[in-house]
Length: 342
Length: 266
Image (cartoon, rainbow over all chains, first blue to last red; front, side, top):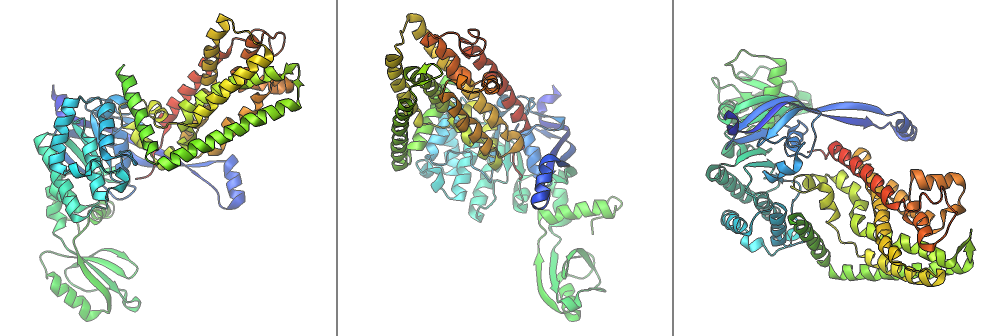
């Protein structure tokens, strides 16, 4: 069957949240108690995608774009307002327990481990909860220990682990039952460079050797660049890009952004050739240099010559700014295909 | 069988977790015991003051209290973790319960070890002992057999009510004040035979908020009383049935609530 090939399928998936606005001041709050005004927020707006077995997909978007809400529907935490999802052939929010047995979940912000107990106890307990045989468990632990260096951490209570150590343990915990699909919600958040790298190496390895399908949300461009062949970008609940990471990299990542802040009396910048203003915020502007004209040095020179500059720096664009670029472009200036975003 | 093993492991872990803070654990046990010794003392003071209320002697009341103490003790043992449940919803901690292949309610129930239960049961037995003597209860074979059934029904009623008010958190997020009002304040009502209240209150405690079935109605049977209470004697043995009804409705409410869970941002 062709379906065997598909790990995750999402069809017109939608999640709305009802926000009740409480009034201002005491009287307003009292009024709101009896007369509630509801505001419907659409966090995920009829999205569709398919992920094949063994894919490593980056799922990115700004804060509040709907990433976590999507992940929570796929892990069975949230029930969607409408639409369907299928993970390993199971509808997650209808069959939570069955789904849970076949997925691994890591939330970067929150540990899955028992806070006051040694790491080993958490692993043992998860082994029992996920009904993993002692033999399979030992085999899996040997593998995880080799890759993540868990041995020295096993006897430590979770509360005493550093963030990087805890993340290694959390990732190991999510893989005790060797799930075919792994969801990672910001697994590198707050980690130092070394810890990030060791987490990335490990994820890339299990994706390659075990064929684990991995969906990763992150704000770190390097995670995406090093790990995800495919990228899905979500903005205001809609998918605005779904394609190869290579394509985006080519277009944006090597395009440097100049961040300039002018003095207030000199805020209007005009007439610098080969420069496009990507974004502005008061007297702060973000510029890109068009490829075919002058280089970065020349542009900075020209700006500094004509205007009083408070601060200037050259930056690699973040995922955030790339997303904003794509989004703004889509809304404001629909260019014929083939042209890059300016 | 396997499921029992899983839950027992979960339970054992909760004890280990508690023992991580040994001093605090011991202090807690001590505090609980002191509190309940005080409670027993208070009970006797009260009973000495009113020798009889509406035809209920001191011994009858002590027995009434013992039924309540047993039901309350076991309810606390099983459902104590529900008291803090709204925090799990507000903080999004409930997320992690949902991504494990076990019933969410089962995981919550077995995630805390409630020491105070021991004290409740000590009180229950003490009150049962004195109640039997003072009221001169004759423990026939049938009574001995029915006692745990009645306590079990009481646990279903008290636990069901707890589960129901807890589930409200799925809609309102914070509901601690509701939980405290319903669970802790309401139990004072049934420390006395409910026929001391007016008719409206009696109907309320029988049909709407049926905690009178925890001790008042079944106590008639054990004390060989007759002719009191609403609809005598139809409700005397109603406890297990009412328990099953209350708990079923609560479990359903809980289930609907879980599907309504909103998690937290990010």
